Image (tube, rainbow, N blue to C red):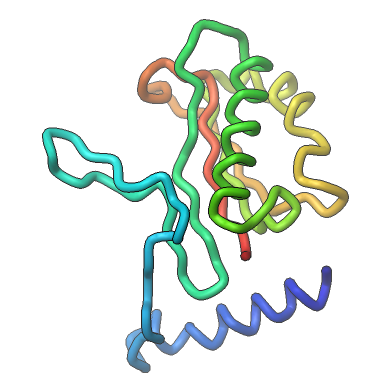
Length: 150
């Protein structure tokens, strides 16, 4: 596992020249994940992709839970959906490198952690968790996105 992460970091650092504008981008730069669910649109105008790939990195969109329930049921649903999307795109929960968690209420932190714990295998990813002052769109109590490797 350490070797895989080291290899991924080398790949990211090799792209540093591109990010800083010193080199031209690798080809192809960004492609939709081959099995992604697609592009989300509003009034027939594309808003965002559900998954995007850059080399061996997979970026998955934020998934929320849009039904009545508590933070535990919402977190479980979101993690199950995230796992489905990862598998569909050729990755898995144990290949996740970075997770961002948005909470509607900071008081839900402990209960969310109870459901989250152990879902990413023995080497959990880096995580950022923030409470969103104005709430999460469509009344979800939690939204999670991630970056994984293929």
